[in-house]
Amino acid sequence: MRIYIIIFAVLLSITFLTGISCTKPAESTNITASQPTVVTPPAPPVTISVTPKNDRAGTKFDISCDNLKNGNGVKIKILQSDGTLVIDRAVASDNSSTFATSISTFGFEPGHYQCRLDDGDGKLLAMEEFDIAGTKKVLFEDDFSNGYSGWYVWSNDKDSFSYDNFKGEPVYHIKSNAAVWMDYIPMHTLGSIGNFAVEVDCWPDPTSTDTKCGLIFRYVSKSTENIWGNNVNFYGFGVATDPGMYGVMMWLDSKWNTLVKYTPTDATQKGQPNRLKVACNGSIIECYVNGLQVETFEDSRLASNGYVGLIAAGSKLNAYFDNFVVYQIK
View 1 (cartoon, rainbow, N blue to C red):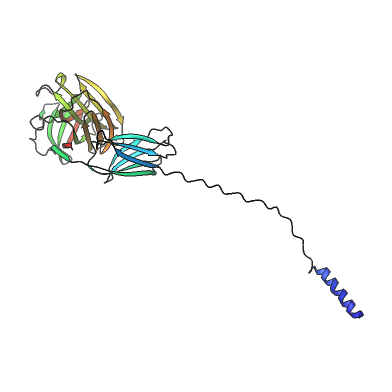
View 2: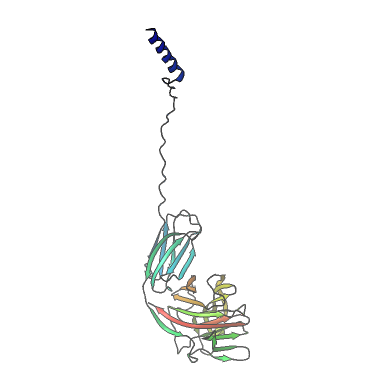
């Protein structure tokens, strides 16, 4: 019996020393209620809408946009199906989430278009596609390969109007020490036209630093002999390429009137032909450089018909023209 008591005592000692049966009490913890996760709803997508105007169907489009974060730096870009940029226009920077504007499209080629809205970094915000219906009726075209197609030919020791060759291509060439020279399609060739578009390739000679060249339109003359001075009124649209600029003038009652002062543009190409186009639809006049609409304005002071032609200006002007075409858009 004494032996069992001793053994039991030993076992109790071992248990106490090793802590086998001892447990550490659990530490108290503070339990807090979980907070709900705040989910910010996504911003509504930017939308753009292109709608023909009812008053001049097919010649103007209303463009509107909603849900912009702000209007700063936003651009409207309209491209033809082949990627040619026709409109590149900044939206008024008024920090607004919406805007509305109108684009005159009479001079657009019939076909399929894409209207983009880009942010200041060029990132696409919204896009809409649309079509412009219509056909072109060519009234007159000239690549100047025929030296008898009706343009003025004359020269002296200082000035010349001539069919010529430039960079291997037949061209019409105006060279002079005078301030301004021009030529227009003779009456017997084309006659007076109303709403139309006219295009030409032109090169201001890069060695002549102040040469400007371009198109005249709605040219009205009281005399077939005198194409200058008090006998004529006309509009003129021209470009310079060093630096790149465009401008619109009007010769009215023997005085120059500036309609659009010469404005810098990246659309011109120095040392290369520049494709100029003017489209006239009533009092609305659209001007294009290499496919890009650089100006649209309204002016009704000259008759809504008249002749079209070419113009060059500068102290020592030297300009070449090619691929002249006039057409009506229906």
